[in-house]
Length: 138
Image 1 (cartoon, rainbow, N blue to C red):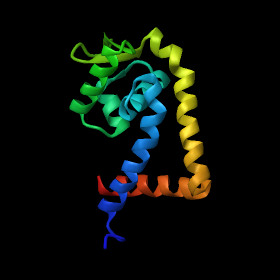
Image 2: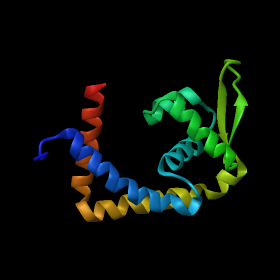
Image 3: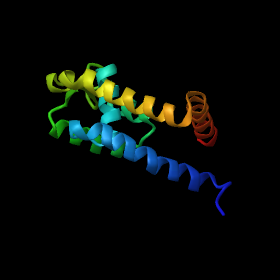
């Protein structure tokens, strides 16, 4: 019935993929959104909340909630921005740096497992097409 429904099929895929990433990030005490945000902060320390939200394609209030959670876990800190006193720059803590490699390894393992299951070419093509559709609909 919903074979050609973009909404139904992408949300069904999101639910399945969410379970994979939840398992990967659970040992770190993180949800998938927190895990991806922390990986971005570790890769690019000093981004503003606005830049994080833009990069992750989430709203600023959602970014605030994720940052609040990461800060409560002692994984990030907000510092005054050198460029604008109204904004914060976000940096990983030493605790986040300690799990950096393991977090990336866990993420890589999920990606490899999914690629083995669906085929690497299919995986890469699907990710590319989803990004393309998302960009077109913005």
